[in-house]
Length: 351
View 1 (cartoon, rainbow, N blue to C red):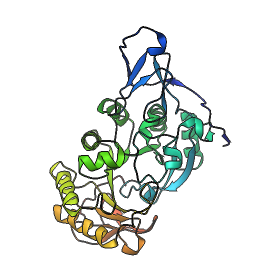
View 2: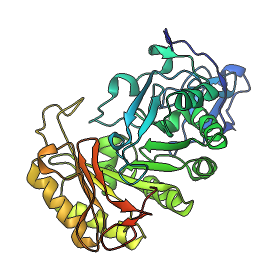
View 3: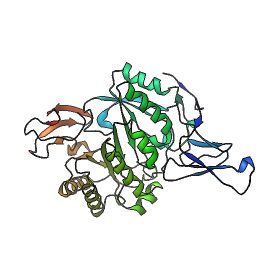
């Protein structure tokens, strides 16, 4: 694979759009509404939406994020993080530039906060991506690093071809996507990790530019459609680490049928526009883990903090370690036929 400067390899009409009536009939005043995500951007002729990947050309919305990933690599699947989905395997990971949120804590702002025309990209059509996975004997493909929603058509094309050829797919996402496109994707998607930023709408908006409810709706849709689901919650000191907020979030998850869905409490480190904040104290991470367990969530992990050893999977029935991990490595897997080898308790996941 070779990189090239960031022009568009292909440009095609966006799948989710509708025309917007304007006060003038002049072509240059024609606007289009994007219906892919809850922002519902009204995009003027020659302009792009919040994501920087969907552009209005003469009254038609086009995607500029197709066949041109700016990042592609093979990772441990635990890095996503996905702990209950093909543990110990590798996953082909890719992204295009762009994102539909503006998170103050973004770890990949160098590619998420610019357009595909500003990055050096690979030439990889959907079939090429699946070919790469098969050539490298990798059983799954991850849409990750930036926000996969903004390269929706590309993701969908890859997922369709992957499913037909026996390769699984996973979306690592902020969950900020409308129900109709998400349901279409779910026909082909095998797994997802959704970044649930916090459980307060005002904080959500200030931190990301998005809202909480659409993300909760996405969680419900993914579960309803049978997509294997895990959740990540980043604990940012003084912003998203309130014990009351964590308790409220965990209670909502249990009450809405997510008791078996693994949750990853992730440690924050200063980055992007929040460089003045300290890292998350380890005591906060341990408290969050205990709150989640007290509320009835069965599988609770601590990420980005190796000293806490919070990455092994514990059987919720007998308390024994069923998957021992060290960082992104699986040391031992004691799951047999989807169950704890000691007490035969069923362990939710895709094994």
